[in-house]
Image 1 (cartoon, rainbow, N blue to C red):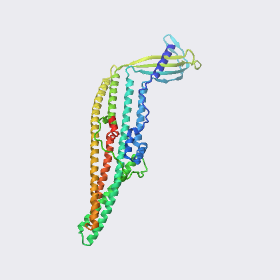
Image 2: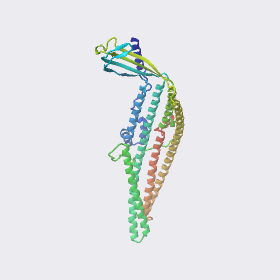
Image 3: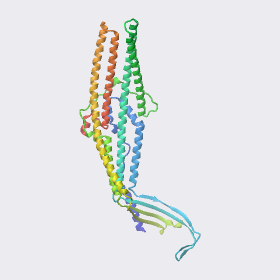
Length: 462
């Protein structure tokens, strides 16, 4: 009896002492600044944008959902880890047996009786992980947890980029509306002057109608820009989790100070640092674990089962020297025939591994394409902005000359106003080109997985 009790206690204590630590997950709280690379966004020289990003990380509902998904995944890993540990439970029993007739066991006769029984045992069940199957299951679930982490990182990068793109589109729309209003004011002056000329017989009705028609086009475009601004404001408020839909603070277009020259080339090592590529690699590693698990599932399993406690028929004798209860045994289990289920599961895991391997290769190729596309787009946007800026300077000089001609009487005011409209239209193109150039840097940041590719040090370190 004492040997059984000692053996059972040794098994319980040793099982608890070898509790694996590899399967434990790290604290789910991490610094989200590591995800989005805040030093990169500080290069845009806009404290308002940085403040909005901080609010985005605190209040965005998609990010909150992602955080809870991480917590769920962390708990699943811990649940899987519990399968590696012994299961100890208390299963007590207190009852009274009443018999109304004699019971016979061969020649032995037991008359009718009644009695109490008190049973206070601890039960132990522990699957001996001879083949390391349960350890592999924990490792597999930990890979799933790390996959969830990469999904969270991708979400942070995508939401940050999309918010910044909408933010700069809003700044662009503000400036375009301002220029559109100047266009409308100028065209209204043209229409008034043309009407006077028509009334004085110096212009035809067709010329007057043409200018009035141009005014309607400008008014229509103004309405479209107003609508676009309202939509952008609504979208930004949703990003920030603001149900009040208040006005979004933003920097003025003329105060923009962004200088991020496009890199000449980008190291393809950046591909390996993208969250989606890391995720594909983790999925491949998890699939490898799942194959090994399916193979070990075919092998027999062994469960140690034991009981330790007290068993008495009188309450006063419950903790006596003769009421101890202890048992221990090993239960082997092996599927002799299961219809080929485990073999087919193993084949399924191998096929899944092959599919994930091809997805990993495709993801690398697609990532290289996206980075290249974003780099080419950034270079083109930068060139186009320079050209557009030069064109605006030329048109500005042309406007200065026509004003000079008006002053000396070789040009009339309508010619000056029309030239002024042409300048506003060209300047609108410059505004769009400048913002598009900024947005192209954001797209390059997003394609690079949140890495600052504009800093040569970061690229060289990879």
